[in-house]
Image 1 (tube, rainbow, N blue to C red):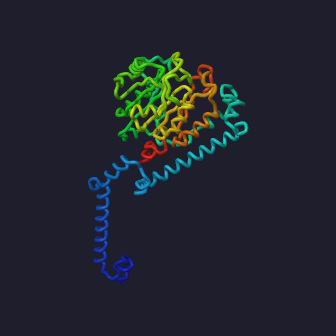
Image 2 (spheres, rainbow, N blue to C red):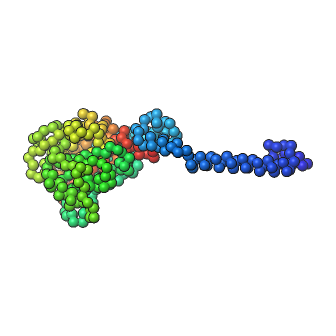
Image 3 (cartoon, helix red, strand yellow):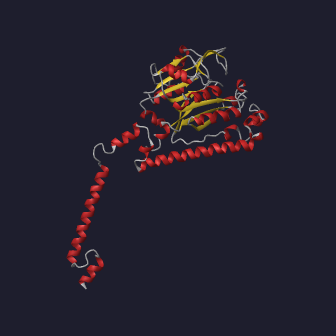
Length: 379
C-alpha cells in the first residue's frame, strides 16, 4: 500500500518510499527555482552591449528588409507599414469613388465648371475637404508654431503646422528644414528650433527683406526666451517656383511686388548644398500648383521626409479663382507617386471671418520611405 501511494502521487518515481518521494519533490523544486532565477537574471541584466548594440543599429541605420526580418519585434514593423500602405490605397480608392459619385460626369474639372468653389453651393456637404481627406496614419502628430509673444498684435493670425512623429528629429544627425513663405508669421520656425535646436532652418521669402524677417523673429519669440540667431536660422530672399527666374509674376505677390526672384527646389537645394530635406514647409500663395509637380519630376520631392503645404483654392481669396478640385486631384496624385502620404488636412477658416469661403487648407504629408515612418513605429 505504501508503494502504491508513492506511485499514485509521484509517477516519475514509481518505486520509492515516502521519504524518498519528498526528497525528490524538494530536489525538483530547487532545480526549477534555480533555472528560473538564471533565466530572469539573463533577461534583466544582459551582457554589456548584447542588447544595446542591436538597438543602436536599428536606430542609426536604414531599416532594410533584412534588418526588419531579423527579429520578431522588428517584423511587426514590416506588418505595420504594410497595413498603413493598405489603408492609404483604400483611402485613395474611396476618394476616387466619391468624385465619381458627386462630380458631374465623374470629373473634378467638370465639377469646378458647374459648381465653382467661390459659390455657396460648393460648400454643401460633402465639401472638398471631406472628399480629399487624409489617407495615412501618423503615430504622433504634433502642431508646431502658432504661439508668439504676448506683445504680438493679435490682428495678424499665427498658424501652426502638423508635424508627424517629431521625436524622431532628435535621432537624426542630419536635420535640414526649408520654409518657403513666411509673411508675418515666424512662429513655426522659432518653435522648430526650440524643439530640435540641432536642426538647420532656412527661410525663403522673396516678398520681404532680411531686416523685416529678423524683426519678426524678435517680436514673436515667446516671452522669456532668446530669439534664435544665425547660423541655426537663415533667411534667403528667393521664392519657390517651377522655374528659375529673376522676373517671376505668377501667384499672389504680396507687399506690392510686381515680380520676384524664384528658383526650383532642385536648384535651391543644389545652391545651398543640401542633398535631402527633413521638413519642407510651403506657403507660396498659389504657385504650389506648378512648383511641386516640377519638384516631383526632378526627383527633389523624393528626398523630402515631410511636406507641410498650404493649398490655395477658389473661394479663399480673389486671386485663387483658377485653382479648384481638378488641380487638387492632380497634385495629390503627383505627390503620392513620390511617396508622399497625407496624414492631416485642416481648412483655413480665417477667410471665412472676412466673408469668404474656406478654400485654403493646411495639408501635411509624410514620406512613406522616410525615417518619420520607418523608424517611428515602436523601434
